[in-house]
Length: 116
Image (cartoon, rainbow, N blue to C red; front, side):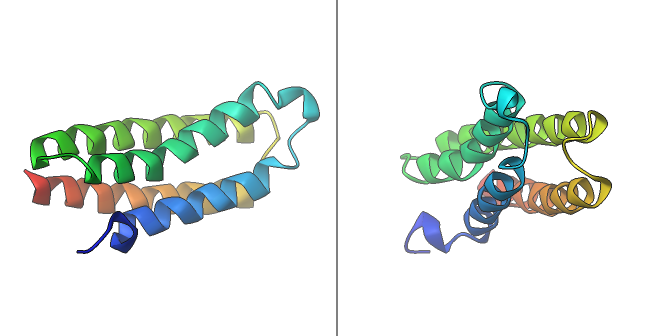
């Protein structure tokens, strides 16, 4: 592996960020500093922490960042469910994002086991 960009988990996390921004553009403007911002920040933290952890000196340090990624992913899953419950996301949008996160979750957990 030459760079963090080669990691499939980073690539999928980047795709999730792009999808998140596209979907949250239609959220009400009064949510820009509320739920919209929260969802976007938790999405952004996924590839950011994967990249930052990659640059650390040891697998132990990298594993700490991967655990942060898992926490942010669960935070994201919760936030999109809130968005669905208040009708900012329709059922299909929620399902697509949630399935994307579940796939990423499984990949990240597998990756973390390899780091141990």
